Length: 314
Image (cartoon, rainbow, N blue to C red; front, side):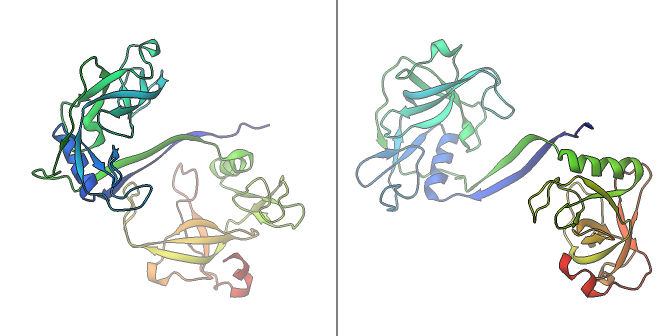
């Protein structure tokens, strides 16, 4: 069996959100080395604070200054920290109920080993040297043997309050296209051929192949060469420049049904003004030197395809 391709893949984007008055006060407080909770109407103190009671859905506004010391309620040892985690040496993930709070806060606990961690142990906040108004202003928790802090009412008012946060969302994983698409990719790269697979039941040809027919649910194995020419079935005009794509806007991205295929694939249309691209336009692939796949598709000069010949592929 031929080797199946695989490669590391990263999906990353910044997530931006605004903060309400309670969350703003909480994060601004961390910047100022103050931990705030919020009082519910039945007298509980929630840390981290929320703006609505999770039981009654009532709005919550009364902020309380809780301690920077607390008690571990449960924990799990992390022997191999990953990128972006609070510490780069082994540590414990711990739920810590801060003094005068009724709920626990999840954060890292710096300890020499799992034998040094236990449920019920006393800990305190270790503040980050540089604080910006984020949960990372608490660098971690560390073991502590002192007394409990006393609760104080806090108005939650600070100079220059934090009004929003930007979190970098990232997912690292290994992607494999599978047997069928590996064969498709290798045929494009080494022979500049588009190869699909035919369903043994409905006889439809899928490009790129999926290894199974999405209609019949049966495995596909019979390879069929399609194209290289095809028909634009539908398209969109792109007006926003992608960060990592060196293509000037506007440009056209289209669904293209290659001749002999029963599934349209994606491709960029070039060699024609963007406002002249149309459904039914006949196109062919354009390759660049050393390219592993077509750079774009351009008009062939043939008459447009009749609508009835591609309507089932829209």
